[in-house]
Amino acid sequence: MNFEFSAEQKELQDQARKFLAEKCPPRVVRNVLEGKDSYDRDLWKALAGMGFLGVSIPEKFGGAGAGYLELCVIAEEIGRALAPVPFASTVCLAAEALLIAGSEAQKQKWLPAIASGEAIGTLALFEGSGNPSANAIKLAASGGVLNGVKKPVPDGAIADFAIVAARTGSSGRESDIGLFLVDMKAGGVDAKPIDNIDPSRGQAELTFRDCKAELLGPADEGWSLLLHLLDRAAVLIAFEQIGGADRALEMARDYALDRIAFGRPIGSFQAIKHMLADMYVSATLARSNSYFGAWALSTNAGELPEAAATARVSATQAFQLCAKNNIQVHGGMGFTWEFDCHLYYRRSNALALALGSQSYWEDALIDRLRRKNAA
Image 1 (cartoon, helix red, strand yellow):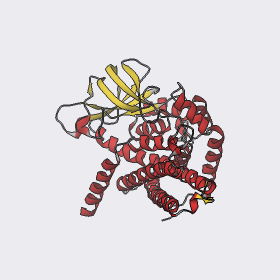
Image 2: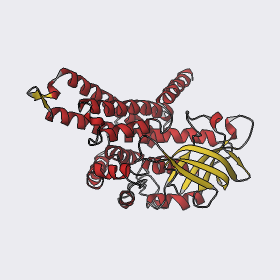
Image 3: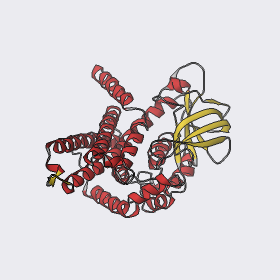
Image 4: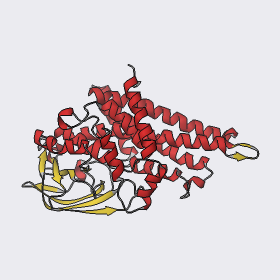
């Protein structure tokens, strides 16, 4: 199997990289990090104007209809630039949920709005600390209304709609979990921003009080749909992570070549060489695993569950290692506010928990491989 991107996909990546280098330099990230805005609205609209938000959305729903390999390319460049926009929550989670389980009417209403940058979506899954678990979902759905609290919800304070995991019965089975679509502007839900390690990607607490909601997909298949959604999102966000890891590695390499100590570049010292080599190996392994995940996602292959978990684990490890070591190569100064290193460190830790912890995905990978080998 050839896991390399095509010439057209590489051209798209080059176009996206040049666009984001111009429209999203570090000062744009800092403006959101240090300011009052939750995201960069101009950048969000510009991404929509380039067709990047709807790259995998079918043409009949206002998207480009290109495919998931193209979306992976865009996700990598979003991660490389640390774009302060609700990309993961809207494109990788909400849009994917609609494509997987939405009705024709739900798709017609929200997917064109996502592609045009007019709507921001999110997934409301967690209800406090912990990993994805059907037993952890307490928010109740009854008679078409929701009651309960979700937190943290990515970009929940700025979302126009949310896909909400809710409990529909009391049997304790996974079939009691349903997915619901909520129009955040219709009332019945309060959103409160909450502090997190990366303010350029907001988090919120959502409180639902008799909030009207539409069922998304079959009522008794919400949990299985959710697990499938998380696998798809894991591949896409893995590309965000390897984009950030690669850029952190480049920053460390460039500084090691420029910084002079004891009359020679610090990159000539063995300790720095080993650190950079570890970063390179980790990032390269993550890229290989993410390419496998991209293939499985784009072909809807049966290997997607284990491919997604592998990509998620290796990309999380790579981004966190590269972001941390980038600070160390900068002599610890990288943690100071004036350097951009901490921006990558923040994002690496935020994405590491976005879909559940690394240990959750490690356990999932082991379980999936066991089941596959036993079949």
